[in-house]
Image 1 (tube, rainbow, N blue to C red):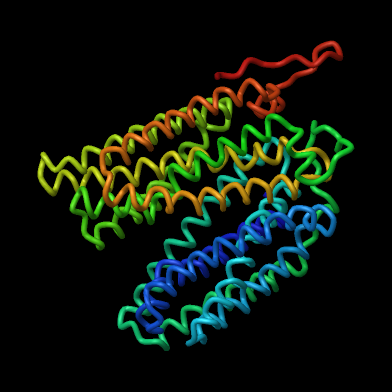
Image 2: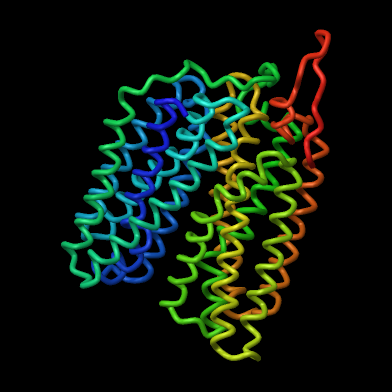
Length: 422
């Protein structure tokens, strides 16, 4: 791992650490501590999503034309201002404006950092680089949340202001860390096709494999991440009798499963076809939803229901650990020269759409339509498996299994592929 990549990973950890201080407590802060009510708190969460949807369509072109580093620094500065303002705001207007700045900055960070990882990696080590990024993000969020919970346990406004000040300080520290970083002028993907006559999203829509990956990505984020803090939480409370404190334990189990399993599953993932890895995650998540359904039956007692519900989150975590070194590198490998930023931004936009639609659909279903809710998301998970296998037919052998490129030997001047396990 080079010095630039190490600095990028440290930056990922710092940004996640800062977010961990505030994300779990945002609703309580706005609704109760600032006494602005549940409606305003809900609007703040919606503003985060809307801000992301507004800035991401323009982010990709800026990443490819200006480079990821200046775009990241602007995003960090915007997020730092938003975080500090949110910690000091006491009116509805200021809270919403601060949330818009923070949400826009956070949304741009993800594709910018992903593009920087692509610039500093090769197809051979890109899988491990994205796995490390995901590991550090979850570790940072978890540690930040634990420390933040101890700071705000008395729910005093000054304690929450301190949390947002720490978050802003992490963003400023990250600006200093990245300011002297040297990157290649433009991330180049080995073996990619040159950019065709179109540009932007029009060119992306002309890539059938990328379009299928975006559809698959929507299903992934809708069926998992879009349910964690909405439909699945509501289902746990209403159908399985799970307490709010147990929801926290379930989320911790999810993070713990990722942290423990990430590098163990990486060895399995690195030499397998990406499409089949994603397909297997669909099956794992279908089992997770079935376990959640068992928790809601209530026929085996509360202790069994609680254990099953926590296991659901842990199973999701194992699937996430398998996806992190698979999906993000595939987005990069599908991008033509000069369009890595646009491809990363497009996929980030798909994620934000799924995270906006997921709670809107899953929340009411999880709270009242318990059986249909479980069946719906079991089917979505199995649909993810089907979509992944269909995507595999669109990929070149090396795009689907990058280890093939590293396994080539030259005999008599002709490259030959060494068989690799499927």
